[in-house]
Image (cartoon, rainbow, N blue to C red; front, side, top):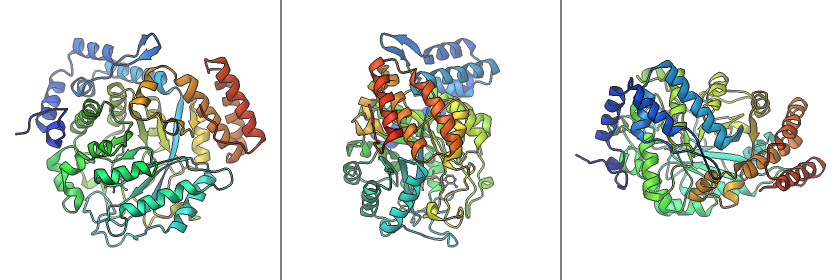
Amino acid sequence: MAVYNPKSLKAEEFINDGEILETIAYAEANKNNVALIDEILEKARPKKDGNGLVCNGLTHREASVLLACEIPEKIEEIYKIAEEIKLAFYGNRIVMFAPLYLSNYCVNGCVYCPYHFKNKHITRKKLTQEEVKAEVIALQDMGHKRLAIEAGEDPVNNPLEYILECIKTIYSINHKNGAIRRVNVNIAATTVEDYRKLKEAGIGTYILFQETYNKESYLKLHPTGPKHDYDYHTEAMDRAMEGGIDDVGLGVLFGLETYKYEFAGLIMHAEHLESVHGVGPHTISVPRLKRADDIDPDEFDNSLADDKFEKIIACIRLAVPYTGMIISTRENEKVRERVLRLGISQISGGSRTSVGGYTEEERPHDSEQFDVSDQRTLDEVVKWLMDNGHIPSFCTACYREGRTGDRFMSFCKSGQILNFCHPNALMTLAEYLVDYASVETKKTGFALIEKELEKIPRERTKEIAKEHIEDIKNSNARDFRF
Ligand code: SAM
């Protein structure tokens, strides 16, 4: 029997089944223990120190107690603290991105994914470099600056060399005032050497969803193909970090296993990265299983209701306050609106999940990875965010200024965000408004920018930001950043 050890590099020791089961039992036994719950809430609350606010975060056991708690006033308190943390470290900024599907060729047999190799009715497609270029131009014309590239796993059709070539193409295109300034990568687990090549290609975050932390379920859900290897998949982030990638993105596919198990596993994974590499995950994604070609979510037993989903997001916010949280267009407008307040810091907009989808007039369905619930255009999403008091941000400054990994974390903790992220968000929003927005969105946006500029604490920074925004309005000068 494997023994729990967060510092171990062996999957079954840092994601330890025994420890997860004990955590769930401990959480269940303490879910009405008001004194303990209050103590945990107190620990999670942002506190003042010399530079501003700081947060302690929570252990997987503490966070699991909050997740198990069903006392309405305590749940309200969890949500309140989640909002406080969100505002303290992310303000009202929401970073925008879009997925770009490169290829849906796949040799794996994942039973929940339409790309599984036995699916004979899905149209298989792989973009040529000319097609990548056309997709990127379409994305730039929408206003996107940050992409997450996605591909199935197929060493013959989509080898790493193909992915690297696509990244090079993406970064090389400047259409009108457009540019993709950060490419995040969501591809199958690979070797240290390959991660090193991805790092050299200038990627932002390496994203890999665990799908499920429960090994027994994992083996059944991934019956064939390289992804069947649970240990190799679970240890991928350690290899990525060894290869020099210090921004990694975790996630589970909610709906496959029981959410309490996944939640404990996810927080343990974050603790493991922190204790081995000195830096936790840069982001956590919270995808839920969706209907797709050949996939009926009702065939899976663990579908997650919206209220539980919201609670998970709030509890993640309390447990790992310095980790960004991402929500995709798998979720509809209503759910997205609610969870933005509870800690989400990045969302996709105007997404198409089919290979080559952005250059099609109509949303194509034949090669889609999942049904998109939020089908609004990027302009509609941007306007909606602003109407709800958020600042849509197209900023990519941190990683381009070398603020990644532990440097990003200490930057977050130093209280400098209002002097950096806030003006960067406003300047990139101004770029979006001038180059791509509709008349209505532009009007709302510039009124918001004017108001939000006043929140920049350092006078000189405020002045410079104002000058840059005037330059953006009156010329083709772009890409200002602090
Ligand atoms: N092939 C890569 C891998 O093996 O990790 C990642 C790319 S895959 C295109 C991205 C993610 O989509 C998967 O990790 C999975 O969590 C998610 N996904 C697959 N099927 C889904 C479905 N039916 N509904 C929602 N998300 C799904």
